[in-house]
Image (cartoon, rainbow, N blue to C red):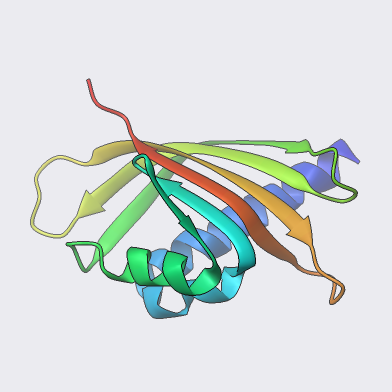
Length: 125
């Protein structure tokens, strides 16, 4: 069970940041109307609002470099908590920005997962 949780967490992280870096306009498909995002203390609900926020960020191209991925089963049947740390390199910037992000993944009837909760923070200092 633990190995599968780790495998799903890693696969999700690879998929999420690949979409974010290369096809951000389609990232809303990972969320549902009940989904919630806290982005640097701003709270948003629903796939449309979350997608609008992520697509309106004041930078275009970026590259995520993932340092750690920790996954645990959640109390929701089949759910997975994923905690990520890493850095974002923005195009034209010399220094990457360190970040932490937490996802709560919920299984769908189709056999995949959606993001119920997403918390993102830049790490300063």
